[in-house]
Length: 195
Image (cartoon, rainbow, N blue to C red):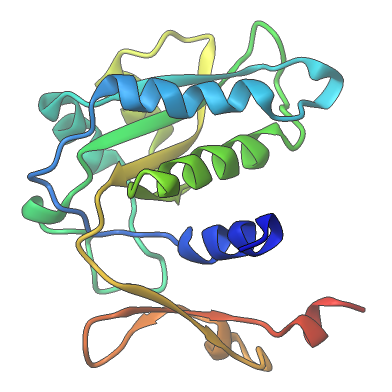
């Protein structure tokens, strides 16, 4: 298989997972390896202002969980049940002593981390909907570090599939669960993306 196809397959496997096997922990060292990938990402002005708080302790995971909001399209779902909650988190913060804006660094780094995790069979969900004050308090994050995203991580306990859609209505792009409880993620066709 050529490298382009390998990358394409890896990207296709790198979905948002929201239910995990809570019996399989992820060692902090594994997360350190994933964070190290961010060192090799491009950075606006090469400032490199992002920092990560690694969370693997069960008590810290439990303290962080209530600050998060899960799956906006599932308005009647409060998130995974306790046996399917994430076993680890990475809290991406900006170091305000360096900058107040990280330009595009946050997305580049999160993609590097999630792609790296996928190669290890670990998947996650990038969460932007969270209570920043509660995250900071639960993890005792110093004031200079402002949380930008929370990446929930674990070994998947659900199946996620991509389906093609014409994307003609908002309903066509909303993810959903099918009759087999598979998480379905509609994607617009290439013909709609290229203008």
